[in-house]
Image (cartoon, rainbow, N blue to C red; front, top):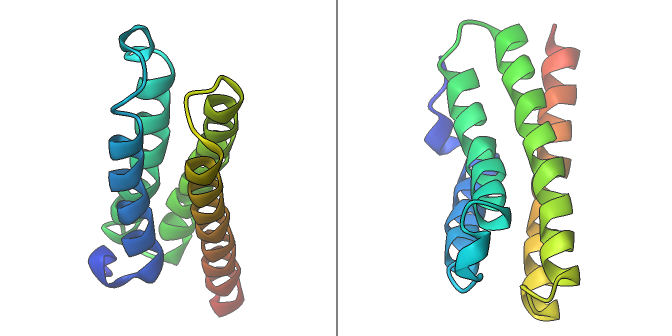
Length: 119
């Protein structure tokens, strides 16, 4: 069992989740159960799945939850793009979030690759 809070990828994902919550506060109320909820859910799923994987036994299970986190990151990547295209995020905020998501996806992919190599 690993302490998820020590993982750089978890730290970055948690920081991104806080940013997404903050950046979606200004979304219209009619999006509360739409895009706002979807962005928050997919984003919080990333560090949550990393944490859950760390609480499981063995690298195979950790790898499975890292794959789920990677899928959630891809979902968030689209939601960030959609929010920009709908005019809900300005270009600067979009670029910051998109870059952070891309970095987390790279980190997750590297982590998964390392787990496979260690087997």
